[in-house]
Amino acid sequence: MPDTGVLLRVIDYSKCMGCETCEAVCEFIHELGPFIKLYELGGGVKRPISCFHCSKAPCIEACPTGAMRRDSQGAVYVELSRCIGCMACLYACPFGIPDYSEVTRTSIKCDLCRVLRSDGLTPACVAMCPSRAILIGGPKTVGDEVKKRALARIVQLGET
Amino acid sequence: MRIVFKKVRTAKKWEKMRFAFLCRQRPGASHHKVAIIGAGPAGLSAAGFLACRGYEVDVYEKLPIPGGMMTFAIPKYRIPLDSIMEGVEELRDKFSVKFTLSTKVACGERRDEGDELATNSLDMLKLAEGYDAVLVATGTWRSRRLGIPGDDAKNVMSALEFLLDLHLEELGLRAGHLGSFRRVVVVGGGLSAIDAAEESLMKGAQEVYLVYRRTIKEAPAGEYEVRRLMRLGVNWIELAAPKSVIAENGIARGVVFQRMKLGEPDETGRPRPVPVPGSEFEVAADVVIAAIGEIPTPPVASECGGIGKYVGKDGRMTVDKTYRVPGTNVFAAGDVVTGPSKIGQAVRLGLLAAKEMDRFLSVKTLVAR
Image (tube, rainbow over all chains, first blue to last red; front, side, top):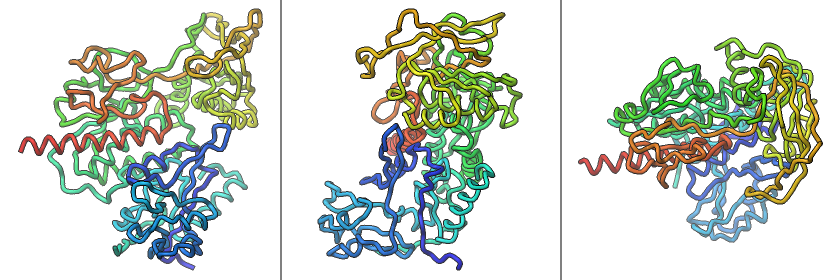
């Protein structure tokens, strides 16, 4: 099936080297960010995590005011004017993604760079990752790439 | 607020580093011209930001290819060359960023690593006069020396020299100086040491020793990276520091190490390595690589019209909160300001400094009008 307008972002941890570029550019463009963050896992290993933009998002279900929404490209975002800062979304999220902002007194999270996308641009973390470790695109495009990379590792064709 | 999304056009958005990730094209040309010295992650990120603000951007780079440490120090399997080069080409072709390569910009005399590849040189102060603002993003292209007897042997080198040599050969820019090697000793416990040891293995070295004066727990590269290299076959020797290089006719044959034990915490808070008397041992080598730290290399090696006093004893460029050298149109960002750091940190400072340059020049324009 060809890709429709829905975007899937996947972090390829087999490529990520923990250089922190994603976090740096995210923080640069989002006053309240970063919304992709690296955490130390011990032994000096740091890796990023961000919202998965689930297609059956528990945060949207749990939100009592309809502030947690999904845009036409599938990105889950907070409509700040409707958010009451109850953080029910955080309780609902299996990955602990939503943050509480003391500035806006609301929930805040990754919106896959709504402003950039409205101009036809790529989310900053994807655009600037030096090691091609953050993929975005339609489910088919991204799914094919992930499988091709896995295949290359199995057959040991080297890096792609 | 209703946002209509424009279709994200081509399929693979992750293939290249989009240094100008904030815009699709350069907006109507500005009457300001800026220069960036150094085409590493800090310089290229700043170039992208400033191009998106309409500036005419000229980038100067001493090496024949842009990318800085991303191109010449970090292994290619971590950062594909195309990812950097296609990003640079986009800056050049779509955002009219002018790249002047193989050109060393400096004020005063100092030899840094990789300088021998520059075929032109420009005076920093004269350059700064020709631009509304200049960003110094020249990184850390000098290495600490072992400072032990015999370290002037021909096959004793810094991690940076070693990695630069390998990458230049790989890129077809220069024949490698090293020839083939079987036994490599790398001294150090940081990421440069890891990269040098791993590249040695990939280049076919049969025995690679990674020797660090503290333990794996203190290694700046982290325990995970050290263990990964051990799995690849690198021999890890901890609690040992080099005492002398065994050299014959100016060629190193091995290194004498002395055992260390951990003492009281030093000024960095890590336990100080204390030599154990009478514990010397030898490791044979046909290449000895010192990966014990890189030093910032600002393009300022003398008084330089007052800029010289903003270079600290450790070589770092001192800037104010707006990344500016006070009283000048010179800004600085990246490792030349912080010392060796991760790519993300260099990108962050490059962007922040570029934003401040934009502010500085916008205010200047308002006042002038």
